[in-house]
Length: 493
Image (tube, rainbow, N blue to C red; front, side, top):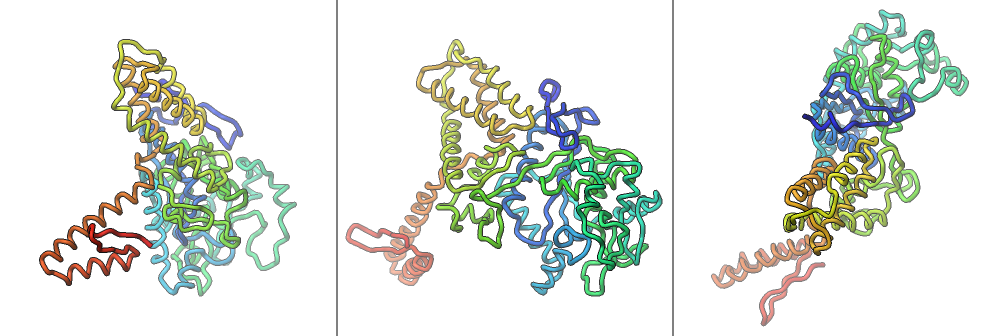
């Protein structure tokens, strides 16, 4: 029997605005799509938080025994500045500024994206398709929408006709907006746009002469609209109707709204059963923004090289910090919050590290199965990681009580306890059992002491060139050797 047959998830569905019992379309199988990054710059921490939330969801679904196909795309074309239908492609702009090919930009920042997620111990998705790899599929979807009379072509560009669509469907069903309000709040067209209405969005854009990224189509040499790529890739790999679509709260409108409209237009049915949205990350109570300096990159957390933090933090500490907030709540990133999370994280790791030393008893004073179920109950309640973490610290208390002889577990209960702690801490939350950051000093000391021994041997062999080389190269990285009567010591700048 699989765990999903006894553990029943309720998740918050943005579409209905309430928690719903999760029931996959195909029993035992889950199709999940998450909007990935636009790879024109280093991935920022807000993106990481969103992807981390769905990494946790992916991990828990797998833990329950579901066969999960998790698709997370790479946007490498078609995403215009300010999410508009006019302007410059973000990747092409970066390529022009740096005088390199657009695909060099894509490659550089895709590699950065993967490197950062690896440091945070993310599981790779089942499929990671790119927009440029699915131009043909996007063109075919546009043809279908045109054939159904829900799009129109003007001067080589194709636009989705929102008002026509809204005659039989509901544009705004996800974000709870109505077209009348959108019309009222939208400025008049300036006469230079090809759109019939301001609400219409691009399915295909004709490329201007200076536009670098372009592909042939029945309408023009151009490029697909940003919203279209996700419809093409999600339906190709998950089918016209799938279980979960996730992303950041900022994508709810217009991106996800447009995806629903495109899916409905093609198949006369809603493409997704459950829409999930992770909330935003702020910093020191304010919106993160490079322009104001209220900003930090993931690698700066690991190095400590940022004025907003006082030290370096291990990736798992930062992951633990982010998972202490529910994915639907706003998370305020602060140095004090990280310091508190670091203490909690190492307290959890210290307890886990002594679990194998615990001795079993003839009887149990703790009802371990109730505690185990409380961990599942937390995750079953819309993936409530903060409640789960509180329950895990209840487990830390049990570990200390058993170690001190103030509580007991039978052999079978102790094995259940160990397996449950390990499963939730490492498999589901995705934490890594690392030693404290401070111990990196011990590793440095060991490495330098080894070099000192090699240097001493070199001097004994009258190999003064090697001896001087070791001393000089250590000095270049800020490590000074001091030779004295008691031997050689070192200090760091």
